[in-house]
Structure formats: structure tokens, C-alpha cells
Length: 124
Image (tube, rainbow, N blue to C red; front, side, top):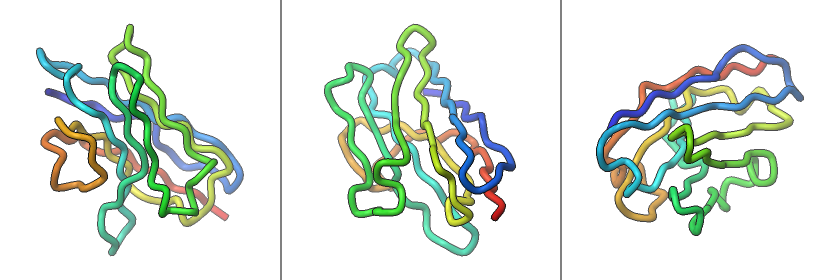
């Protein structure tokens, strides 16, 4: 499974961004796809994940700061998973990664494949 994340950039507080994760490889459709982020000096944290069939979508419910602002979706025809981020805040600044896991999980260690990350910087 190969993953290519894109869509990051420098934006102002209140703006929106849509990150994309293009997946390829013979078996990628059998994996759950997740988004994570890692701010400088902090651990990588789970944001959201889904499966390609659409029956499973879940967010970091404990992460009140993103609840209701971030939306994960997929476009099967393009083999792409998206993370729509609205009302961005300076504390959303991080490198965002997409990853693939063969189980439903929020734990980074359970994800076997990772994209290269895309930087999101939100200025105040």
C-alpha cells in the first residue's frame, strides 16, 4: 500500500483546507484509512478514520478541539480519502499524515502504512 498526502499549506485562522490522501497498491481497499497529526514537540494523535465501504467512520471524540470542524470522507473512484478542516485555529498547526490499518483503531502503532505527511500552518 502506498499513500500520498497533499493539500497542506499556510492559512489564516478561520480558513478551511481539504487534505487529500491518494492510495494505491493491490490491497489498499481492504484497509481502514486514518488521519493523524503531529505538532512540534508533541506525540502523533489520531484525528479520524474510515473504511472504503463507508460503513465505518469515526473521529477522535476525545479531541474536543476538532469535533464538528473536521470531516473525513472518501472518493472511491479516485482512490482518495479527504480530511476537510473548517474554522482552522493556530493550534491545528501540525504535520498531517494519512495511514492505513487492517483493523478499526485509533492507535498509531496499529497502522502499517503511512504517507509522507503534509504541513498545515495556521496563523493567528
